Structure formats: C-alpha cells, structure tokens
Image (cartoon, rainbow, N blue to C red; front, side, top):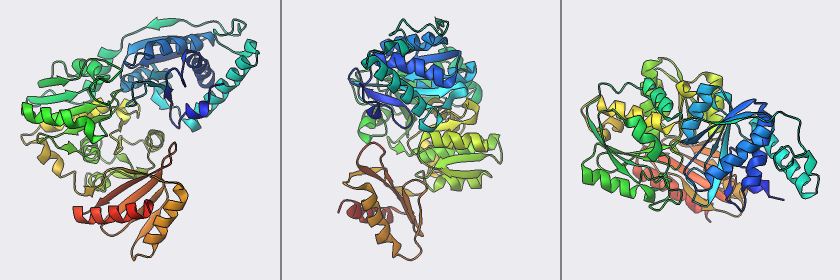
Length: 465
C-alpha cells in the first residue's frame, strides 16, 4: 500500500510522480475530497507539469463517482484556482507541486470560498478515507471502494465533467482591486521560470502602460532554465542581470504555480518580502483605515511598525498559510503577509495571490516619480539574515541549548508561538524546527548589519556545535 505519511503534508498532498502519487491515488483523493467536503460540485485546475492533466482526469473521475459535478478550468495559477473557488462558491483542487522539481506533483485543496483544507480542516480525514480504500483494494475488498476502480459502487448518481476558462475573469477581478489607470509608463522584466506566470501575466498585464520584457514564459514543467523557486537567490540571478541590461524600472519573479511573487529593484537588488508586505499594508490601510493586518513572526519589525504608523492593528501569527488564513477570517483583517512572499487579501477571499501584490507594487511605483529602491527604503529598516537551515540530530535538544545560552543575558525575552523566538534590545531571532526534515530554521534581524551578523554567528555556533 502507498505510504501516505510521506505524501500528505501539513497543508497539501505532494510527492514524486508516479512513485508516490499516481493516477489511482488521485482518483481516490477525488472521491475522498467530495465525501469530506460534502460537495455536490467542485472546480479543478492544474499547472504545466507533464503529469498534471492525467492526474486531474483521475481526480475528476473519483469526484464524479461520488455524485459531484466537476468543472475543470485547465491550465491556471494557484491563485486563479482560488479565484474560481471564491467566485463560483465551490470547493477546489489545484494540481501543482509549486516550486518543487519536475518529478514532483501534488494537490492543494480548499473548501468553497477558497477556505484552506489542512490537517485540522479536512486533510487528515481525506487521508484516512484514502488509506481505508487502499487497504480494501489491496485485500480484495474492492466493492467498498467508491470509485471507478470498483464498478460495484452505485450509491451515488455519477456527476458530470465540464470545461471552463476563467483566465480573463480572474484578470478582470484583480484589476478591479488596484487602480493602475493613471500610473506612468514602466519597464518591467518578468521571470516566469517556465511556470504559470507565463500563462497569467500576458492576460493580467494586457493594456496596462507597461513595457514587459518576458523571461522563460514558455510553459515547461521540466524547468529547463532554473528552478521555479525565487526564494533561492541563485534562481533570480538571470532576472537581476536582465533588469540592469534593460535599464528596467523593476523585475518580478514568480514561482512555479505563480502564487508567490518576488521583486527586484532598478539596481538589480532583491526587495525583501517584508518590505513588500509593509508597502502593500500601507496601501490597504489607506483604503480601509483602522483595519487589521496579519504578519507571521519571521517578518521584519518594520511590518508591525508601519501598520501602527498607518493607524492599523498588527496581529502576529505562526508561519504557514493555514494560520494566516484562520487569523484573517477571525479578525476580518484586510491583508496578510509572510516573509516567504505569500500575500493574502480580504478582497480575494483571504487567499494568497502574488499577482495582486505585484499590481500593488506597480501602482505604488507608477504613482510617483522616484525609483523603486527609494520607494521601499522607508519599509526596509533593519538588517536581516534570511532563513538559514541547519541539519541537526535532535531539534529539541539543540533548541534547548540555544535557549539556555541566551537566558543568562540581561533584557532577553522568549516566546514559543512557533519554535523559539529570542528578543534583545536591538535584535531578535527565531529558531523553528522543520516538520518534514531534521532541520532547524534560523531567522535573525537587528538594527544594524554588524549586530545581526554577531547574533547570527553566535546562534549558528550553538546550533551546529
């Protein structure tokens, strides 16, 4: 039987195709998804990976075997699938492995209105159902399996499968949320990384006063140019060089499923996602005064500072989109941001969309005459290390060593909202264990580069001792 413990993650399903995730499993996940959500209709989309269309067909077959109608929107970004789920008020499934290498695929699932499906909100139940059906198939009790794998199931009227294109509707919705009508002309280099940005950007940017220089727009799930993971600095080197060569105003890089967007300024320097979070927060608070803004605990100190300066209320959460979305719903927050470049909007069903964040950056830059580096400087106030991973034998033991070492220092405070956060007068760091690997993830920030480097090196020496 397939090992679902390696396939079902905290927020999605993800594994190597076909070794871990194959068509049979996709069909069972489709049936389980319908059973757990109780849906009579769902929407399904997929990215450009070669295995995606076949997996979608299998998932849809499983869904209709349980009586649900399936609308397949075909090639789309993950936030385009969220748009379809929100606008059509249907549960949705997106087949993608985001920034993972070509041999991977996966399923991101949501309830109607793009509400997340994670371990605590249905994913564990889906896994349990699939494991039970797999066991029945392996033991010869196939009659209990509710899918086309077993013709014995006749408990539900089969649903229907229809095709629908939502790209133009998705683009129109995004453009209704950000006014770009009066911006000055801008030259922007866009690196789609052979991912779904190559599908969405031409339609969303069409008609805007933008001179778009496309890079790697050809949809190719083998990623021939570089990994579609702009969080890794080596994957934006081409974009940085092209921005300088073109004399462009900025560069944008999307990940494989185009739900995250990274920004490069006119000098070819990467702009911190925390600075983008602060910039977009200020714009959203200008439209919705006094609102709440969500940020996770590894975003810069600048984010809650800017939110307070703009009259808003910052709320700090754990890392992870399910926590952000839960807090967005609970507080009615207008916006949420993570240092991983996930950006969440109340006007987009609390879901994350890198494209909408990119439109905000274009509107802010095009609405004034200065360069992007000057515009974001007021939002980028501190020195940060970025995330540093260390392989350790015992996550808890190494974390305890770090805590003990810093506990003796005057004025140092601790919290354990997510891992261990240690805060001094002019610095802080967070140390979080990976849920899937023997890693500790360190993020450090300080008021100046020298202090950041000192604290970073001290913490790493303890972690790696």
